[in-house]
Amino acid sequence: MLTIDGSRGEGGGQILRSALALSLVTETPFRIINIRRRRSKPGLMRQHLAAVHAAMDVGAAEVKGDQLGSRELVFRPTTIRSGNYRFSIGSTGSCTLVLQTVLPALCLAPGPSDIELEGGTHNPFAPPFDFLAYAFLPLLERMGPGISAKLMQPGFYPAGGGKIRVHIEPTPRLVPVDLHRRGKILDYRACAMIANLPRHIAERELRTVAQSLGWDPQHLCIEEVAHAQGPGNVLSLKIISEYVTEVFTGFGERRVTAEQVAQRACKQARAYMSAQVPIGPHLADQLLLPMALAGGGSFRTMSPSSHSKTNIEVIQSFLPVDVRIAQIENKQWEIWITKNEEGYL
Image (cartoon, rainbow, N blue to C red):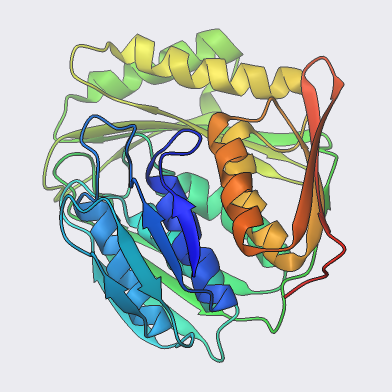
């Protein structure tokens, strides 16, 4: 049985989620030790258990060690099952992280699937729904599957209460893609979403975006969320180019001004536009696993994050692929994924 050390690299929950996703597709049983060892609260938290149980359902898997606080888990999948699924992540958990765990398998399942996820849709330290819908899923669709995602109700950290519905039309095999050019920037949008908070917060964020990035008023919008379970504020910056769309996000926090929230998001957007690459660092994290499952692909990005480097180690534990990273210009890196001499599973 394959053994994964959960303390390697950045040592977070991404190691577990990637291992679960790869185990489902390759039908490889694994044991993971030292789960989230480097975190202040090591072991499985509720949202990690939600990902484990979602993978267990999709893969008809036998699982040992799936308890709160557990630092070791054994996962034995049998077969990928398409169908209708409903996963409740809980108040503080991220819907998108649980979806990330089962999505690769359901993209290769024997039939279509519908998933309903309840929990957080816009959480710090997790891909927000807007990033998923506009940046990641369109690129994943280029590899073969058909995927539609709808935000039924936003859910903000820590109250949660959000809902996402996703429909997946699978493909027999993921197709490699190469993403080397961003092309011209065709459009841009800034949307400040608020729930149970004064409107002036969103207005100040958008004013900061206009001043910092020079974006025109017709490209700025405010969305006031009704029926949210708690207060929340998210600023999303969408940059639409010829070959790719990128999304950068700022999350409202206590004791952080609206101007600071906006400046954080603007800083990410400026760095991306300055680098002249198609793929930002967070999108690079997400693309590695499906590209490896496709048996190849490449993209140009910014300096790879520690998450990306750790993810590559996990991927190579399950799949016979080579991953090369090279800096080609001052702000540009290229990542290539190719089959190694052992071929593909």
